Image 1 (cartoon, helix red, strand yellow):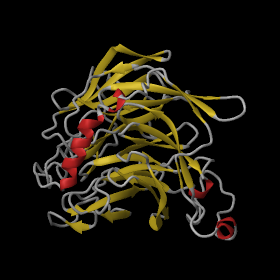
Image 2 (image 1 turned 180 degrees about the horizontal axis):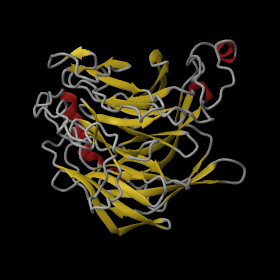
Image 3 (image 1 turned 30 degrees about the vertical axis):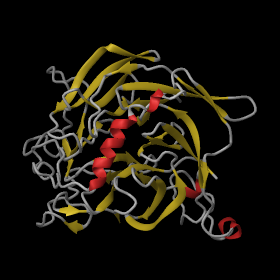
Image 4 (image 1 turned 180 degrees about the vertical axis):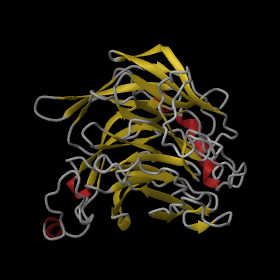
Length: 428
């Protein structure tokens, strides 16, 4: 396959990552006190007087963004260690963090305040096990809770290597494995570019990111084929239809009436490795892994009339980033990335979230992201859809292998390493 050599290395690391939980630190039922001691720190850009003076942002609301990133400074506080964590979600009405482990298990992390300050993290036993394939880039890759908190959805590659999305009911604090039913499935022709993230959007529908199916250069031509669910981001209601169908198609999906797969919402993606909504504006951010040269981030603004990204085409494989790849004219609905970077120390982008929590005022409105091979956390700041600043926050995730970010119920952000660590992003 015409994939950069780093991909082979990533696959080997992913395969080895299943052994992380075999250390002496058994995560089952473990308790960790989160004191104020960080793992890594970064100083604000410029000297202290400048950061505290005219260069620092004034008081802002959760909806406003900072003028610049000069006062941004973070530390990482380890919350827990699991076996190859891959994604995180929060159940509505609960402050607990739910984390997937690559081999197929889901655990809850309860964050409990302690007398005198600080938080105690309690990691629970597995709530469910879907026993996934872990070859290549496969595994349990995403979870999402229904907005009403009654059901959980798991996105994974099964033993045959195909994408599955299953639904299970929530019974109190437990996941009812006996209620498990299939919501969506599709064959995966290769062991890479599975995508796999799922998340409910502000509109209440479930979104599923699927890569182009694998190989190099989109050999099956899926990304520009709206009739193929691969190379797309899908949108549907995961609850059963009145006709007994496993899911329902929103009437405003671009191909709900024909002309393409009815679930398809966005086309032209290669391997979208994490998307998220800005909780203050509903803007949609997508990080897409490039081929041999360029990683990219795309912003799809919300305009209030429909959910962001309807019928958008991110251009793969006609373009890699903004550079021609396979060649040809820009497709209908083409949206160019807001930010790209060339490969160097990095090899595979990991998208994050727009920071809106109160703990990080110097980053309010900035989109955070990282890279699987270069674990530095970076920030992008935009204004009116135009990039105004991008900078490193000069903090590396311990263990590297940054596989995902997470957003807590209070808007505070977390970052996950496939090597086992889960870290809260705190102010320096």
